[in-house]
Length: 282
Image (cartoon, rainbow, N blue to C red):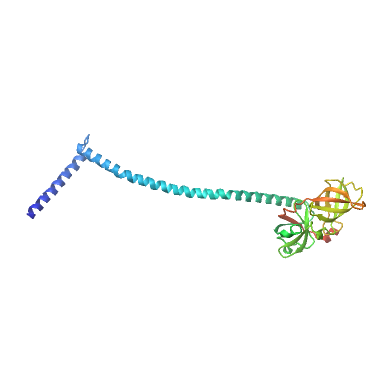
């Protein structure tokens, strides 16, 4: 019984192989049309591929969309970070442009002087001594010594009171020490009028120049310079501009109130006149 079953099985397999060979040979022949069986097989295969491919394509589309979404989120985060930094970048650019302009002005002013200058940056300024002093990043190794005049691009601001190896302590004109023996020359109609700085009016933010002769004719707008006659400063350094003139309390002389050219609240870059007080006597 088993032999008969095995023989029938073998015959069915052989018959199937023969039919398959015939179908392959038939399909490979030159024909102008396909058979119903081929059409059915092709249509069934295409339908099956469509049915199976549709959900696969859908799932693939979902994953592709999710991947693009994550990429877009990451890109948006990077763009937001750049946008957040934009104000800081603009501020840095403005600050650098302002510093470059200030340095160009300093070089232009120093090139017109008959003495060498050293540019320096303010590195320290104490809030409780805001109108008295500050520290710069140049010192003895840069040729600075006590008594040298210190200027901004606008005008005289102070003097080197103490020079260290790589830094210097600058005393401003607004302090009582710097005001001592500061003789000034006020130009009125090309005529010099002399006086001495006595104090700094903190309420009005003005230098007070005393001992000016009566009937000097000084007016608002007259410019004030160092005289070089006494004190540590060379002659001809611009200090400020007269904003008011009045008689002293005894009526024997006049006082002039002077607005400093330099902005005492905004000092960043200065340059030191490398000319000792003794050289003013030459």
